[in-house]
Image (cartoon, rainbow, N blue to C red):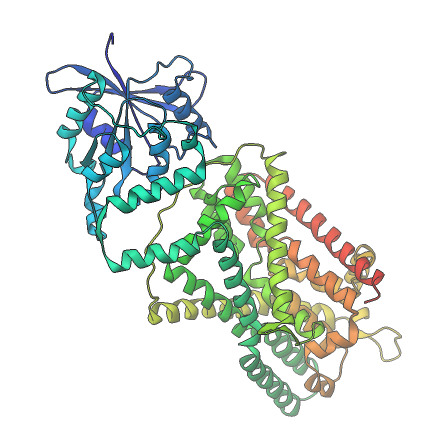
Length: 622
């Protein structure tokens, strides 16, 4: 060997490589770029015990030698000698997170198969001990056939021992005993590598706490390539079934209270505009949205429960595999998950996504996630037109349809992401890493507090945005007053009716009537306003006695056909979010170009989906 030995630090992301690199090199570092790429190159020098220098490079974190990002390509090319302008390292220091031994060993086995001298730094052993995991470094060394040095880089523990092992690796003093089958191409077989890593990890563990073993047993199912997605789909299915099954009684109580208020106001108030304002605008308008509070709370109960138990992070891990096929990484999962509550915090959460193309794509598809504001719209149409019947043991047809609507939004978002990543946001999917929290029992107090906050936000929204929008709509529907001899109804004669006439020309081909065309306008303020708008619109043309006797569900059943109802559902799967979402998109992208693009493509999707649904349903004679 001539010149200064070259040693490369390599390992999975978040294994503590950078901290170890700093501990070994101190201030003797320099940063540049690898030749031909924009990936940063961190290099430094360490001094061995006898004063001899060693050049050390900190390679980008990687999960395997089959790269899925520019960082991983650089790591692969350096350790195989294919990186332009970079010589092959004389030895590798593989950094392993002691608390995630099995996952990190998969990459370690690939690196050992290359045949280079290797030293394993078993890092963060203090955190593993804290979590109830005790490892035997000597057993790990025997299993791998390479030196293993326990380290705690941030406290500089094991640094001198690691330098001694590096000295031995660059001078040839470390003799590896490798089994005949370990260095051949079979190590690159993912299944064999995974099984070998699991076996070595099991033999290396001296002891672990029962809670850690329980976590591993649960994860063996929850994160299984086959059973994991099935479990996730099952949990989502149960959640949407519960939205209808568990809410039936409390929704009935609220509807009964709404009917009592309508009858009381009818008896106490004299006929005129004020009574119409109270009954048509306030009680029927706002009340038609408040009635869905139990369903929204049930939905959030499941979401909060999954977050508190630690399962939601596992769901992100499972979704990362799927999302990578559509040009996204798991980093997009949390913002998209937040968008199920509301697209506004979901779009704001994209700030954590490092890749700008990934972030832009996530922002543009966030409105396709079915936010809680859509739930009242879905619920009223499903209750009116989908029979409350069973299609199997414990499987209700209404819950199945709701589940299908949520899945349609997700599928639509993934297809949109695929198209966007190949056109306006062209680029490769970025890598993603997350730390799995421990499973734990949720605290009842935290669940109750979370539900109370969601209920307050919903009721506050109903008392402000929905209330104001409904009252404005009531005014537009009530004026001017239709003459007694007019052939037009009050809705048709009003200002709002005349506006709806113009919009109806565009919406009629997809099966929408004038009332729907009218309701779509205030729904831009908030999705759930569509329900209050429909309730107010139908209330204007009916007598007070009819209103007291008929719920909005019954009114829709008498006014709409099934194809129209299905087209209305399809529209809301893809239609743009409220104006606040557009404003947030403008702020986060610092341009009106992308909000305008979002509005255009989402309206086009909604129109096509509603039209296809309507004419398909008509074609089948529904």
